[in-house]
Structure formats: C-alpha cells, structure tokens
Length: 184
Image: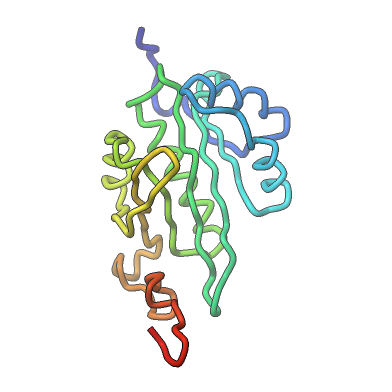
C-alpha cells in the first residue's frame, strides 16, 4: 500500500540519543541488525560521526551516517557516507536522495571536498541513485557478504571531479610494499 505524501513533508535532522530505539527498528525492518548503533551514537557525540534521520509526519522513514576521516599529508580529510537506508514502504520517493544531499552538505560544511561511500555490487537501486548524483566508481571493494564498489565524489564544484592532488591519490597496495634491498 502506497502512503501518499509530498517530498516537502520530509525533513532531515540530526539524531538524538532518544532516536536509538527507532533507528534500531528501522534497521531491522530492512533486514539489518541493530548491532553497533551504540558505538555510532557515541562517535556522533564525540564529533567523529553524524547520524541524520529523515522524518515524514512524525514517522522515522530513513537514515544515513556520515564519518569524518582524519586528514593526512595536509589534506582536509575525507567524508564517508554509510548506512543510507529508507523504510521499505517509503522507497522510490526521493527520500534517499534527500538524505544523500544532507550528508554531502554536512561534509562540505566542515570544509571537506572529497566524499566516498560503499555499495554492494548487486544493489542496483542504490548504485543508480549514487551514480545519478555524481558519484563515480573509484575502486572495487570486497565485503564479508560479497563484492561491491567504493564510489567517490568531489564536492568542490570549482574542480573537475577527478582532479585530486597527487599526494591525495590512492596508492595501490602493491606499490606500498618494501622489498629487502630495494623498492617494489
């Protein structure tokens, strides 16, 4: 049964401690476990993460987590989006896009211009959403449950999407190896 609503009725806000049980129920409604949520809320309280929730008419309908990864070699670091979820009855109504936009705005507000996220290779709806919003495949990923991709987006509109300074480019693991008596 479709629930009629207007996208304008959906609001996105930061999670509060009392949202933990509701978010746990939402995660369970899509087949995810609620494990680790306490740690996410603790990381959010410490400023390392941000949990955003989507509400429509007082009902929790979606959520996303934003992690702020540390700066290296003078860079501003990277924002990482994870656990973007929308309740099954509320999907394909623009809520995922609204959460993704809010997550990107939170990352940009910290002065960070690079954003990554992971997606399962078989999750076609999520992959379409991310690609339609400017993300590009950056590197393959292997999760305990199967293959996937790490996607990347440059949030700085003044730069071409793939113009990453050399010091910030990912170095393949095989080039990081040090061999006795020389380099790789």
